[in-house]
Length: 105
Image (cartoon, rainbow, N blue to C red; front, side, top):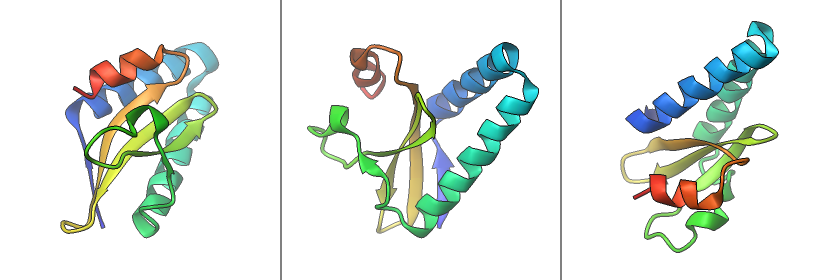
């Protein structure tokens, strides 16, 4: 199973890691990376294991998420034909829901 990150998703992930390292320390940021790798590995084995993202339920494609930390969601979609997981966003749930909707356009 291939995994592809959208450019904006990678940027948002890097921002989250930077914030985490500055606020909570490098060890916490590294733990976050490890958790993300484990979650992505699980999603590769079981692409439909993530929860459907309720904010994006009206979209044409099915978007799912897994929590990386309590307030950080890794939002992805699965293309069965291409056998690829597309990571489309990394979203801090403290943000207003409209921000996620706007970022997906």
